[in-house]
Length: 593
Image 1 (tube, one colour):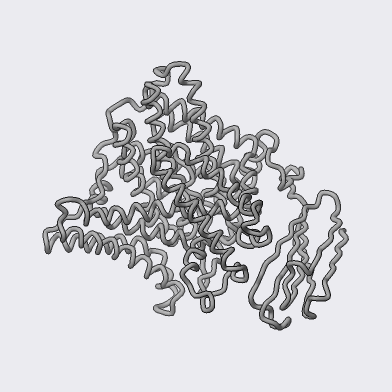
Image 2 (cartoon, rainbow, N blue to C red):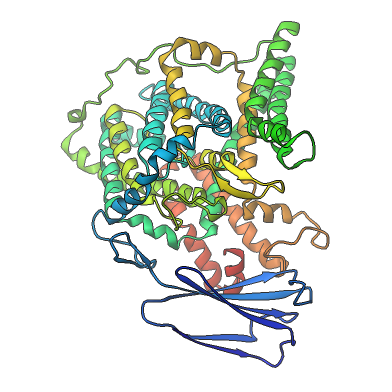
């Protein structure tokens, strides 16, 4: 029982409603006030019983329910929740960050393992196949592209074959062993920038790069293991949409920037063939356009429901086939051969070195000194992994297997990632972490939609993640897949990157507010923040955009090693905006719900 006191100012208009609802562990008290606003007029007083958490949320809404009348109202919701109970009956307080050693990992596996058989059988369907084909190209292309960049930057110490193998091995093992298999791991732009910066540091210290990298990775794996054992991932409950969306837009921007740069380079490089440049643009646009068009058929009125669903599910794969056929037709008719996806011809390291890194070749002082840059690497991988997990675990995807909290599975996932990080370090392979854009595309491709395009559930399985990365591994092992990939032009993959980047922006409030800067507010669709002063919304949007731009510049510069610190400082930006009163606390709670 708890005592609830509600005091309303006489300035409020007469239409109001008080409602109370309760589910298994949460008590919701809602006050709806019409035509007035609750900012300074309504006061809630609570005397909750011991052990009960209280959270107040003020939600502005534009249209009142018909039975209340009026066009504008504020809904003030207070949630009283008893701390969740662990499987062993102990209380798991949401405010707690650290738990006893191994408690979080044990809980994650105890809740997920009973669903393991269903994770396999639920993945045997056409929608999972469509997701696998699309994400195969979306995951393979960055591996080869990033691998080529890494090979050039490290003088061949790690190249395309190492990146592809690491992507495949880590991806398969993660899909099979992690409590949350929908999340994908892979190479990321910030990780690439960090590794290149680490190569420069090893050069300045006059030590061998691979042993230094391996020791840094072992320290990093140890830090991540410590975080997993102590359930440090609970800290992501403290993060807000602000951090999630800035990081997500950064990753999407990296993909979009890379795709646009690759296409435009055909027009700007000296001696460029005008016909090839035009065909590059056509193939990329055809891949992106057809995939986008077909994906939208699911909510259209054309064809039958079954045809719409299948065309929508296989849209990216159809786009790749269409773009490749256009390139082949152009080659036959005009003799213009576009550059194709190049793949290592044999399974061997880039320089022919042994697979195991000689750990003892590094001086003792450098082995201990590697623990310092490893802290930055651990921060980067920790944030990559957990921010991606927050996006994938978003309640809008309605996933149910072994979960009722946004961080369920995070501790077990971090445990698996720590082992993979240590293992790849010893082999001289690039580190993997939560691939934000590809994970978001993965969960969306597995979402079950109704006729209005609303998500009603998600196909939670281990088959798609394992199959995607097994196919990538097959390309490294067998000649036939390599010969097929040689038929896929690079402009087609640029179109896939454009599709991946643009679809990843969909649903992000930061992106909606950026578009809102150029919209007429009087006719634009109403959003959750529409009732706030436009100057406030614009300021917050510009600050977030500046954060993305700054991180983009740093990530691409020689200071890329510091990019993890910028991600960690994002919550401080939010705090400073409120502390300096540039944005009022109530308005910030609406903008950054």
